[in-house]
Length: 279
Ligand SMILES: NC(=O)c1ccc[n+]([C@@H]2O[C@H](COP(=O)([O-])OP(=O)(O)OC[C@H]3O[C@@H](n4cnc5c(N)ncnc54)[C@H](OP(=O)(O)O)[C@@H]3O)[C@@H](O)[C@H]2O)c1
Image (cartoon, rainbow, N blue to C red; front, side):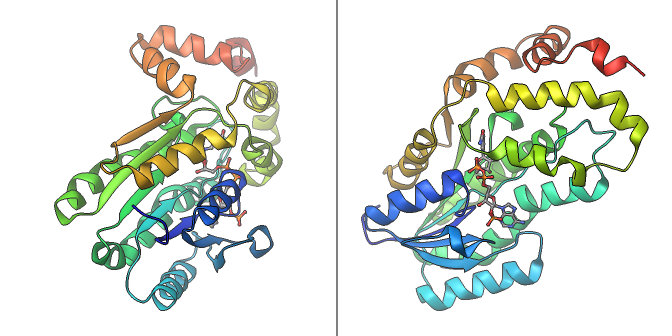
């Protein structure tokens, strides 16, 4: 795919998104940068988008149609949130919001932009995460929604390839951004109000939060590079795993017996069985 092509990016206002917008704009792409915070977008056309709102998704697609005149070369679905905490504590609203942002809203947007993508023989790049391949305790909402996005991407790849629309999945491991700091700060709003449960899970939540925020992580540029490869390769791969954890650690762990894998995962998050069982 050559310079001067158009790309619509969700999650364009986040850490990976702003780096991707800057890099693609520099290379001459016409970038439509979507998110809720216009102030985070420079050197690109901002498109207001709240993925939890059907009306906002419809407006954003309409804006893309009127700006681009019927043809879109690429869509990058990069928006994502977590709803941290053990599943007993995560509120139904927070679970719903995670699925709306990570899967359902992006699918609805993709459906509305597909006629433009089909006209351009364009491509779709969905950004999931290793947490969708390997379920993390205390991040069940993130893992479940990213696993769903993974399946949606697989189905779309097979359904759309015969129509000339290529679909790729970028699957990063841990990336150095404020993603988990933000979700930890929001965690109070994710939880059902239940002081007993907060007490029961409190030390496990704190330990896991500390582990994901301070663990080894790759720089944002590595993910940007993988997305750009998926956008520009003559024949994009189905899947781009980014980082040693996504490429080696996760596949290795998924092949272990569950009883061993569970223990390793809990330990890597600094969560002891006692901290989960203590009433
Ligand atoms: N950081 C990591 O360790 C890591 C690892 C693997 C995969 N990923 C994935 O990479 C992607 C980007 O992550 P990041 O680290 O750059 O996170 P980030 O800085 O927190 O960015 C998240 C993006 O999602 C957007 N978003 C959140 N709620 C939205 C909503 N209701 N409607 C529309 N957009 C919404 C935000 O837009 P506004 O700010 O404008 O609301 C923001 O642009 C996510 O899909 C994440 O799951 C991250």
